[in-house]
Image 1 (cartoon, one colour):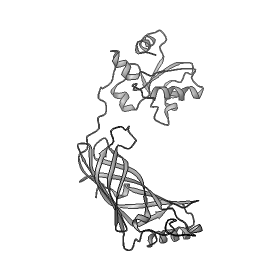
Image 2 (cartoon, one colour):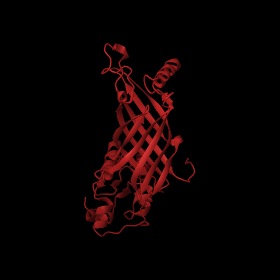
Image 3 (cartoon, helix red, strand yellow):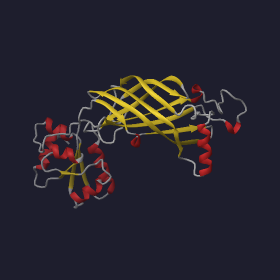
Image 4 (tube, one colour):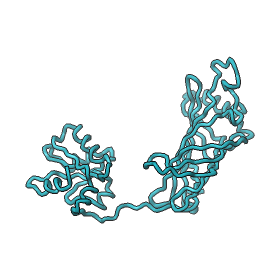
Length: 305
């Protein structure tokens, strides 16, 4: 369906019901005249459409952004799958094609414009966390460890540097149900077999470079972080991709990334198959995986430290 074809349908004696399937703030800013709003990204999308169009015999045209966005096509598939509406068509050209054809739009015209963040942002430990996973040949354990401090520094929206310090005293396990076995595992992880927490209560990552990944889309890594990871007092270079995203008001920044490291390079030798023989059930994989989430607030804002 082209924009002129949709225009002709809307001017016909029995026009279709026109559903704008983007979020409410986009609907308020720009829409084809006569539209109703039901956001396809929300779990209540089908209920919203049923409320807006109670007549199952009605012809419905759904549209969104256009320009290759799958919003309209997805909305049409969802509506057809219900079996409730017999006549559903997507206008896949959406707002972009309608505007390109010189046809009128209504709304405030003020699309949301996020603030460009700038300056240092201090880690909020309450909203930041590391999830760890350790494995052997046939099983795994997982849990969390707390972040003690950290900082993300931006300049005009671009990442300059990042650092975080891990509180190794606050390592926890999530997968074991037996409290005694859980306590035994945590006690073992704290010994020199693994992290030697008594002598090295913190670990740290500090960037030496933050390389922007130009070919990315929202929700995929947009930076490659290069830096130094220190554990048990031993430091090695480390690089991993991360997603760095700022809130719309520019008052907070969240960074998320995951990486694996070889614990034996940091002095943790217990159960390593490259260092011991005949381990049997005592074998522990050398690599540990960390998923890091850092939530940082602009310095001086409530919730920052």
